[in-house]
Length: 304
Image (cartoon, rainbow, N blue to C red; front, side):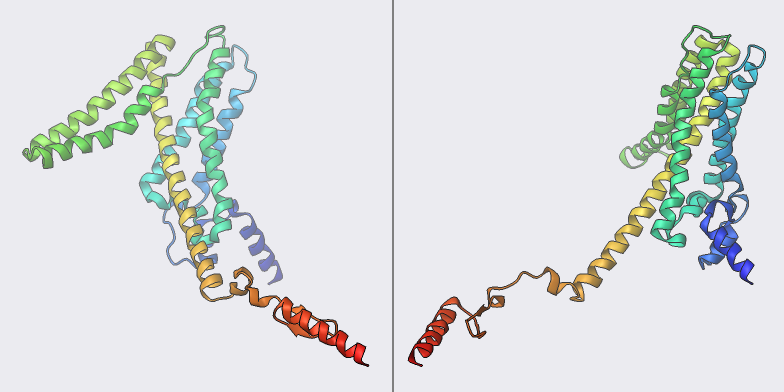
């Protein structure tokens, strides 16, 4: 029984070692996240993949072995991004169940939220460390390379909102038939994607050749989608923290101020709170009363 309590305490103290079902039971949460992404296994795998990719970027490779890094680094980053995309697609915002303040409280959720921020920072940095690695390889030795990401990133972020705006204008502004609305949506969506991804592919092919340029562009797209998924989950987590903190502040305000607990501490002292003591210890409300009392005391002493 004692060993069981000790084990339970240790598992609770190290949240990255317990699974979703146990965490939900410990936190008395009725609903748990189903499937693979209801466990910490895929998230730990993401951390390992990103860490492995960054470590490989700074390893020393020979001319015969550097091909392992050239292929291995993007494979690790792409695999991590695919897991992140699948997590968001499979369970939505519940993908960050392991740092939900509703389960673990504000501070429990906050400290579990830190790994998510670290993974995002590491992923953003990984593309630049990979560029540094490529620039130092024998194939690119002496040549500074830069993977083209900006046009693809803009296209991926802008395409869907722009397509919905165009469809809304065609529907409510111009009141055109439904099939024209759908055509306008699809043309806008795929047109923006084609332009943005095409520019990135063209730039990458100019640097790395046709074959490797297309492969690197494909990797860049998967990488960007993974970053977008993590950024979205990061925003969801931040809003959860803000809402949790706002609720705590509101409750604290009503408890401390509306119940009158702090009234005596925060209320300013009035002038009536000041008292004046005469020579015999009498209490008076004004200084003139004190002076009159002292004169009466002196006259009484003199008459004796």
